Image (tube, rainbow, N blue to C red):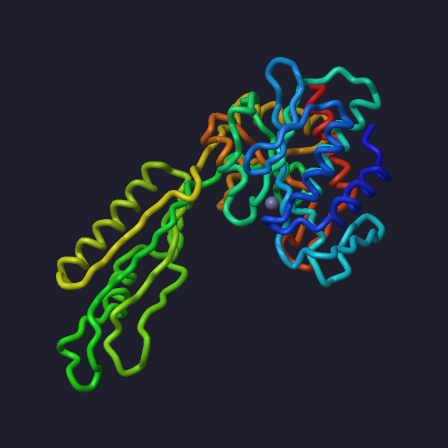
Length: 358
Ligand SMILES: [Zn+2]
């Protein structure tokens, strides 16, 4: 059975190893050592992701990411009753080391019990926090699993994420013509003016329950007294509906061509590039149904909901690995107030254990 003392020690030991995004090597080596001790054979792909495998049919992928956000150096995890928090100067790194801990504790407990279980592939990624970089560079030729549980959600393990939007980066670069603002403004073309008109003609905010659009930054101009030659605009949109996503994409392109007609002498470049691909699992999907029934067997009610954010599950889904995301007992993620609930973390480990023996 999952052991609370061992679980807390594993988490604190991992939290003490600095692993800000891009600097995961030390924790990766430690995790490789632990996974090998559990009898798995561990490969590192070219990007440094950890892929632990074992023989057997239809393995279930268990995944979490190794990197943590800043401030995340010199973390001093403090156990206070049922919670683990930092000393207030850093995050505690429950996102996502609590997820890794749940996976390790489940496998350790199952090994100890000598329980028969489903084969696993444990995939621990790098650089999740800066845009799913590790999973996007994951060597999928090493991945045999077709189903994954990603331990990377906020809150209790029963918070199950079954869908996530497609994410599109939107960038505009506008080049007008500089001119003295007081002497000969009629010779200029204001890139800022064009940017403003463009932004005003784009959608904004929540477009429908599954779609959002945001312009996040606008920069441009060089001095007060010159017609600005350059402006840059960056934004994003997300939708869980592929048709809506395509419709918004066309709406953006139409807005750009209308502005181009209005300012034929300016140069307006647009780049719309996919950040991550969305996915939606139905409640009757076999993986979702199994997760829900295992939780029910633990006396817990799962809550299924899509998320507005992305995780490695988006990338896995794109490569044909159906994935659900479960909570990792952490609240206040990405802040120095982050804390891990030990009972919730025990539940996450027990869930993982039960899922593998179900
Ligand atoms: Zn995370």
